[in-house]
Image (spheres, rainbow, N blue to C red):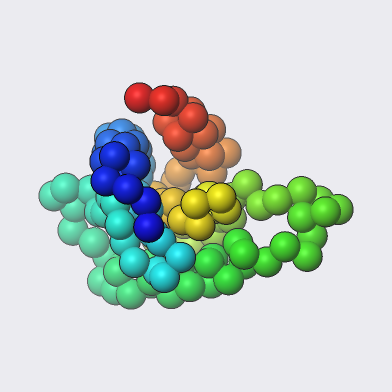
Amino acid sequence: MADSAQLSLHSKKCARLLSESEIRFAGIVDKDGKLIAGGFKEGLVPHEGDETRLHSFLEFVSKASIRKEYDESLGPINYLAARRDKAVLVSFPFPITQILLLISAEPSANIENLAKKVVEIFTDVN
């Protein structure tokens, strides 16, 4: 598990993501599937079953993210995205630390723009 300084930094970065209008959930999950930083946007009323669906998506993404069979020929996974009727779900694996950033956004969200915003926030040292 990451140390408290790293968790504090992850919490701040998730908060920055949650300030984006289209993002509903931004959380860091450890290799055991436990939410260690972030969560739902404050004041947001989650869709019925949001937490259950996010957990199910997390399980799928965790398994897909650790698969390495195409890394040599295609390169590692940068992110995985799923567009649903009620939400866009995007996950970003951090293979070295074995954590995962999971984002749920409004269905109108542009996945590429979300990915750029995540890279911008998570490569910023502050």
